[in-house]
Length: 327
Ligand SMILES: O=CC(=O)O
Image 1 (cartoon, rainbow, N blue to C red):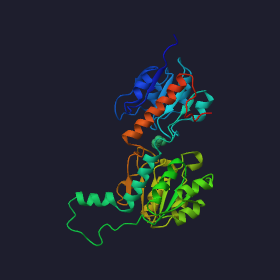
Image 2: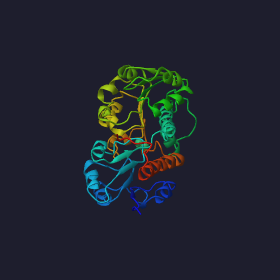
Image 3: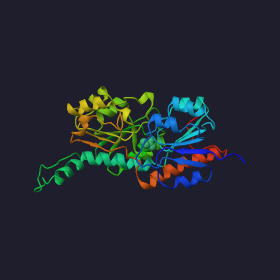
Image 4: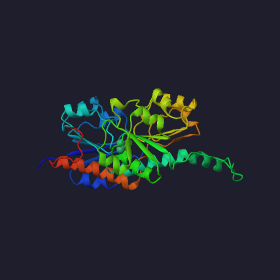
């Protein structure tokens, strides 16, 4: 009888994934909700497993992968429970013959919903006005009270019109928005037509948009894609929405642009030095800050967990995992 694979789940996840993994292997799991193992802790715990089911907050770097490749059993695969996989050194994994998978598609609508929620909330000053009410300051309706910005009919610029960006455009069409997009590669004409997307050069998009929403993956090429220069190009009445990855935006430049009134506000789900947040942002009323929750619904996090588990199970059964990101 071949030995059952040893599987390590690095954080507590929603329950449906566990039985899928327990059916094929011996599962060890971090069951302490909210506890994220440090790199040292991962280095202590991960070697000696055939499989890791990891989360975006786990740093799976070359050092860890090498340690896992040099123990018995040898690590065979990292199944990341996320669409983004910039937390994993995929090149090192490929070099060491360790497969990596992600969870695309199942979180696109949920993430697009949050991007749109941030857009609406920052435009209509919802958290700010709610804080005002909770502080007991609402003493009567006022004609000047919390006037915000119209979303209906405004221009939305989508940077990175992949699966999630396209679904943000779909939501925007319900608000009669004009939707510009910028991508590495222009989309097929039928996709542009389906989502009402107009291909636009980055600088023109930044100059023309009332809302700029970021949806590109984090790659060397998208590091600080939005920095001082790009923020200066934006309208002083425009808002920046980021549900992609923190380091796509130069967060210090963003603080400066907000302080200088170069843009009107921001809705941020992700941060450059997550979980740290630039302290100045915490005191800005025109900025909405949420803790990386774009895919956080029970249904979506369950789909992500079971998708990660199914990728892992496929590999263990000698099949090709459906969502491999390594060659
Ligand atoms: O950030 C979450 C993801 O990439 O799925």
